[in-house]
Amino acid sequence: MGSIDVLIFAKLREKVGSNYLSVTVGSESTPRDEFFDLILSQYPEFAEIVKTCALAVDNAYTSADTIITKNSEVALILPVSGG
Amino acid sequence: MKAIESDEIYVALTESAIDIQAGYSYVNHPECGGIASFVGTTRSFYGNRKVSRLEYEAYEGMALSEMERICKKAKELSNGSLYRLWVVHRIGVVPVQEASIAIYASSPHRKEALDGVNFIIDEVKSVVPIWKKEFYDGFVESSSWKTCQRCLVAFSNDPSLSRTLNKLDVTAPSAECDNSTSDCAEESLGAEWKMNTEWSRPDPK
Image (cartoon, rainbow over all chains, first blue to last red; front, side, top):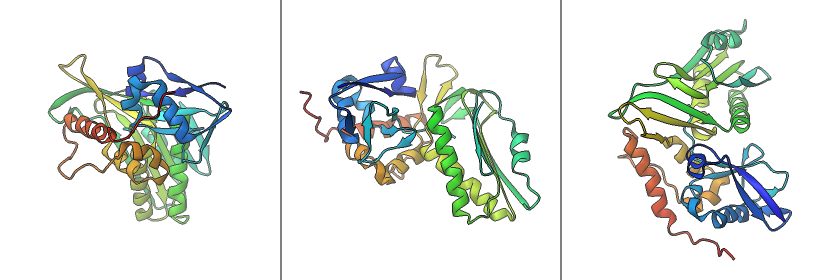
């Protein structure tokens, strides 16, 4: 039980008006897909843009078997436009 | 300036002007007969809009680690033909005509150096978490976060992002979409949303 702050950037950061979204979790560890659904359900007003994002954990893109814990650094990555 | 340096790879993010000469100096090596480079600069026009400046934002830690990972991959793919790699991306405001990214690669022969630079810029544009905001003259309050078309394709091709993509149902941009106007990028994102409506939201109990 507790919450995990998800880092957000660029257009999403501007829409939210903050550098993170605090996501309430129900257990010590949450599978990536379940965590993604938690974000969507807790922030329906941003769901449209969140759905365009990839989830990163500890500075790397995730796969379905990634587990998120309280110690994870989690971020929503919008389609990028660097270069 | 935040940087990572290891195994003859140097990657950095900087908020000031990129020191192009430093890249040349870093990769220059007595066993290398070829140095290739790419410098991306801010254009004054995007489609039919006049661009006054660009602003870049990065997820710094991940951007650096992805840049380093890409350089390691480039060296691996070159079978040791790439000697030194130098990649610097500018963050914050980048005025017109100034460099947003500079890449240098050295190799005993030119082809590997040129291929290496090409690989790196393609990968950077596909996956490195950096976002560009364009500001247009005459539309003081008007600006838009750009979506790199290559990025959308990369997202759609990367199986590790399948979960996101199942929800997105992202497809490659249509052949008609050359991303030549800012409206085009907006339309691409709009198209993604339309497909997303097929996805059923989790029960918020």
